[in-house]
Image (cartoon, rainbow, N blue to C red):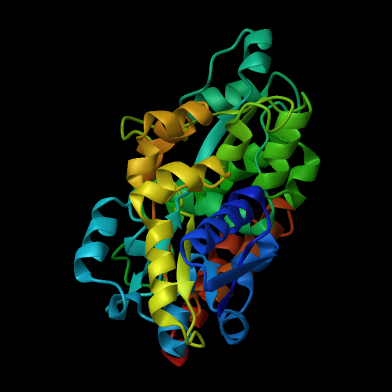
Length: 388
């Protein structure tokens, strides 16, 4: 008997499809037993991969860890056990940069089984009752927020606030960390100031509790109460668009824009399927991972069991869109033009520290100027030579 253990994150989107695929795989592979466990969403963002790799054969993880795993050797480069032809197909079928986000330092460290980015969500019934349309621009979002406090609310937990800061910078035309400033700055002062001020405006009009909310909390609140009508930025969850999942389905759409560039620059999220270096059944592990990431499983069992596919075939499939109130096709333009965060060793630690700095700014502990300086100093510290 081959026994394999995996760890994913605790939500129907992350846990249910892995249980379903493990059960189906066991039906066609009688000698294989796959057990899945789940950790919190916060743990998904910052639990040390080294520790998980010592305990599990499979790890569902976020792409900012890639520099760390490449440096530490905690995972198996999947191209050593999956054919080049199969990887080329998965790359071609990727939603935006989802597949590419797990390629680092010459190796493919995971397969994209889940694609996400910050998108917008709204309650059609509440907007209709207020006599307003879905906002398309940021000016329209701010106008909508004046209807009443909390009508427009977004997740502002520190890590989500930082991601929204990145999105606001990238969607304005300047990708964080990629300019030729030559001074260790994340973004130019002007872009950074404008993004922080917009984030501050959005925090000011939303529910006060949103400073402690992640996307799941916002989508739960939107789908079970009538308090929030529109969320301009939050990592999308197709579950909340499905009929019967919660009391009131949420409609999802592209992020608001500032000009004619369209819905570009949203921070890329999602999840990759990795095989740990401790795994001793590599051929079986690679077969399972490849099947889960493949178009057929992704557009059927994976989505039907509550998952959010990483394969573009699923995102454009009529049946997939039919059961998710067109979540996938409605947000695909945002996903295809999403912004991928850096993945250097130490980025996850930088992200954790930088998140607190943005959180302090939203709590009015520091000015935007001081916050930008502290963010740049934090970046220089974690991206410096001692962390390479």
